[in-house]
Image 1 (tube, rainbow, N blue to C red):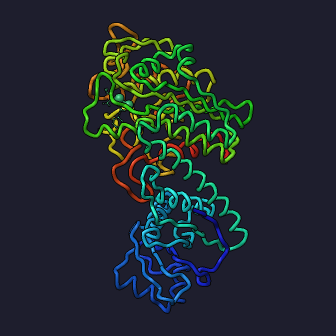
Image 2 (cartoon, rainbow, N blue to C red; image 1 turned 90 degrees about the horizontal axis):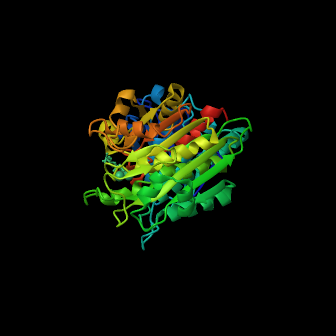
Image 3 (cartoon, protein in one colour; image 1 turned 45 degrees about the vertical axis):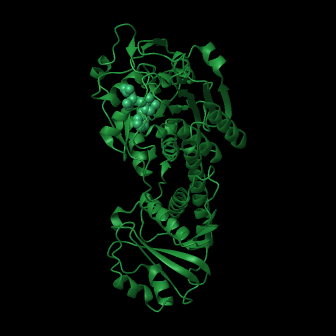
Length: 500
Ligand code: BES
Ligand code: ZN
Ligand code: ZN
């Protein structure tokens, strides 16, 4: 699908559909007034008849029956004017794209919501429209014999001048890149475990690296063993799929600037191992590589946008299977950091593989390390499916991550990480054990990760167990893999490095 900005008159352009916006209680906006006039007051009449009040994401649509060059008009509510942000526009654009698709429309026009979202620039609004539209229209049908037939070919976003058209085109392009990168992450998450193996993740990382010029190295099982990554080796030992350790380097920033390290849990299927999970719902554990998918997607976005930054992505990738040579409760593994880890429960495997990735990150003398992982059911219990858990050892870093997450519509909420929690994972036979008491499970998991981070390293951990995968579609989020973390990391890196 093509998304462009065009200097055009909505009253003069033939199209399948036209999107207009209204705030709560607003009967008219300059643009709605203009179209209303061309339709001899039909909009005013229909707003009254259908009791449309402009609440956020409320929609009103009608056929123009030959009275306007747009065959169908869709008015979408944005709620209170003071509350409208880029996220509102993203959600509303997702909703309008879905409505246009359902109506079988191929080409449509969207106005910019300039009057409704005053804080945002035209480029930012065009970006939000592009993101919301493409994310909402995502489908995963590559494994179906019957493909989705309703497809939109083009969306034109109305610019007010040739100059604005240029600025908006740039914004829309950025939105397209971000949405496509998040959709790549969704594809990886939605792909079942027998497709999205550790080797497949590595192949995909290689593919985008060739396309966008990322320097990528894949450590195979032999190299992982040579390095003595005991956590990753241990978890992989129950599986016939060879583990991979994916390293993606994008070092295009100032030489003196230390790199930002992104680490993602790449557990391509989590059976629980010998501490096997119950059968019900286990199929969703194909999504246990969502953190890894976020890193690969973010690396794609950063490189495609040619950001002048230093970023390295690390993805430890393996299955967690209960094979004959699998690790057992009570086993002790030695991580790359040198820390010995007693395996109390083989289902707490994410922290074992992340331990090695976090230790490996130290080699880059990073500015900061951010890991993303579907780590604990406990985090889902704590925060539900709306916010991810945010942990770390640096207030500024946590603040930047929280703020940018809210900005882009993937809220992360700070959780405590006091030393008391570290005491709960002391082991009788090793340095740490991989499970503490049931209560506070998301925090002890984070405390475990912290053991493998350098004392001077600024680090944050985002637990996305409750947020990375959804059974229910809403606005621009489709069922299955959410693709979260991709837009968040790009926005965070922009903010942290001051690079636009
Ligand atoms: N991958 C799971 C966490 C998870 C649960 C992700 C639900 C998404 C949805 C993780 O490896 C796991 O199994 N964690 C255990 C840890 C426990 C054994 C301490 C958990 O949360 O139950
Ligand atoms: Zn597990
Ligand atoms: Zn897991």
